[in-house]
Structure formats: C-alpha cells, structure tokens
Image (cartoon, rainbow over the protein chains, first blue to last red):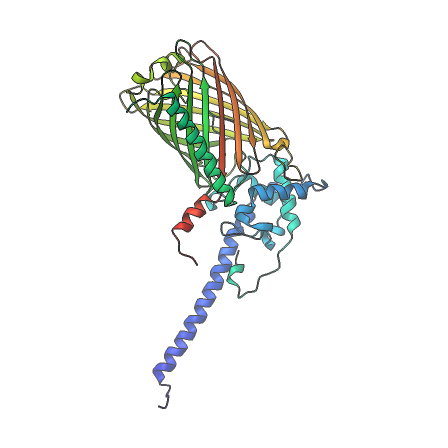
Length: 153
Length: 305
C-alpha cells in the first residue's frame, strides 16, 4: 500500500511538533523558575546582614567542625556533601556558593519556614558560622548533563 | 477497671521503656537519626519547633515525695511530630504509680504549637493549644496552674481516678536565643470544660550549652552536647482569685545531653519553693529523634518509581 501524506496528516504532524517544542520550552521555563524560587530567599537577605563577615575565617578547625555539624543537622535534607536531596536543594549551586557568608548565616538563623527549612537559631552563633565555613568550602558542583532529569535542584 | 498490682505496674513500666528502646533500635537500623538540640526544660517550652518530618519519641518520669500520703512515680510517653517548620503536634499518654496503692493510666493529651512569625525576631512568640482528657489521679505535673497544691494529690487513686478532667490549655510562649543562651517565658490559661473558672500559671526558663563551638570530630562527651538550664514554674490562681496565694511554686536546675546518634537524656531535680509544693521531685527523660519519619510514612503509600 502506498503511503500518502495527506494535508490533514501534515497539519497534525506540524501541530504535534509545535506543541512538543512548546512543552519542552515550558518545562525548561518551569525548571528555571523552580530553581530561581528555591534560591530566591538569598536575595531577600537584608543588606546589613549580608555584610557580616565570618569571624571564624582564620579558624583552622572551622571547616572540620562545620562538616560534623552538617552531617548531624543538615545532611538528612541537603544530601551528602550538600549536593541536594529530595527535601532540600543543593548547596553547591552557584547561587549559594557565590552568596555572601552573611547571607548564608542569615538563612540558617531565620530558616525559610514556609518552605520547610527550619530555624537554626538554637545552634549557638559560632556553630552556625562553622556551618557557613563548611558550606562555602564545598565549592560549586560540576553542572549535571542537561538531559539528566535527576540533576535538577 | 481493676487497679494494677505492683508487679503489673513494674511490668508496664518495663514494657514502656522496652517499647521506646525497640523503636529507637529500629530507627538506628534505618540510619534515619538526627542529632537533636534539645533544651533541658521539662515544663517550659521555647520557640524551637520540631524539624519538619521528624518524629521524636520521648519517655519522661517523675518521682515525687508527698506529705501525708505515699510517694509516687508519674510517667508519660510523648510522640512529637514536626508537621511543618512552623507547626509541631504532640500526643501524650500519661500514667502513674502511687506506692502502696496502684498504677493507673491517667489519660491523654494532644497539643499543637504554631509559630506565627516566619523569621527570628527579638522575641519569638509561639501559640500553644492543648486538649487534655485525664483524671484527677494524673500526677505528671507537666504544668502547674491555678491553685494546684500538693494536698490535691494526696487523694487515693481509687477515688481520684473517678473524676474525669477535660481541659483546654492555651499558652503564649515568648522565647529568644541570644549568644547561645535561651530565655523563655510561658504564660498559660487553662479552662476546665465543665463549669470551672479560667486558671492561670507560668513557666520561666534559661539555658546554655557548655560550649559554643562545635568540635572538629564526632564525639559523645564534647561539651557542646550538654545544655544546662534552670526553670521556674507555678500557679497564678484563677479568674476569681488571681495571685500567688495558695499556689505551688517550683525551681528546677536541669541538664540535657544531646547525643549525636539522636538520643537525648534529661535530668532535672526539682525543689518546691513553698509549703503548698511537693518538697522534692526527681524528673528525668529520654528521647529519640527519627528524622525521616514523615518520608518513611509517605513512602508506604507510594508505589515504587
């Protein structure tokens, strides 16, 4: 049987292709918006708080102590090495790693309670700064393959 | 219901501790523990809520002296769940043994704590609502209100257990963390759902870890895991006779040991400050935090991906 591409088939193919491309764009846009909203709290940190410097910058034990604290309090949600988990985003995204230490400290202190991030003011200030030291020491994680859905924050 | 014998009460106590240990052990197997950072308070509350999705299983015990009646051992189990980062809900089961009398299940409580402000402030309010369905034999002294006095608890179990008490308890918790210290003040108002006046009470607390910095290695005995504190609580009378007269008042230094494995141990010797109060109470508690509990329950109702 000879296949003939009728006008109707052509219209359907073109429409399907257009819808598929549009859906892909929408997915990309949604992924970008989700990523932006996850890290949007960092943009809301008051300037005065952002300017605070880490008093433990020269403490040689700060990163090691921060790692112990991270494993005890944060790893459950933020994943091993801060790479992100089901419940919380990666801390090795550029948004976090390029953020001022004061901004990360402020997020730790105030939490993001509407988005399930608890308030950690119950940890004394030096322990929160130790956590900031550890988080900042992690560096930006290599970008995942764009086709890898699991790489989303 | 027949009162239990001493042997049965001992068995009940062993059973409750055994259940707690078993649940802790099972949780250890699942590697879902999280180090708690609990203050040593047994009566006062601070504004630090349970982490979302975490379940804390707790067992508390109070040994009390009683003038004019046998001493007692009151105990309760708590299941504290972080529903969200701003809402913690908690369920209690209470019981007590009055020596030479009996052991009783004395009722249950359901409490909710809600944090209305989403950020840390100079003072952080938490709203607390609790429903209690207990009987007059309840002696856990989780709060002291109105004109509660020691003599109220001298009533034999066989009589006290017949009087059911259903109450709504409201608290305003005002708390602040400052340079490692926690300061908290609780004001409470209790309404018996029968025709009784509103009763009032308070609790104050202050606490601080023994070290501010974390150690660079995992350890159980590092000073940052120990939090020392002091709490004071008592009744403030009722709507028709507000004040300190005919009330009981207590002062209690305490220590909490937060182990990295998720266990917390608390001990709090408590001293009565006036003639209406029990002279001495020895209070202690053990708790275990299961951090991924919410996720575990969720996964039970989801298919494999």
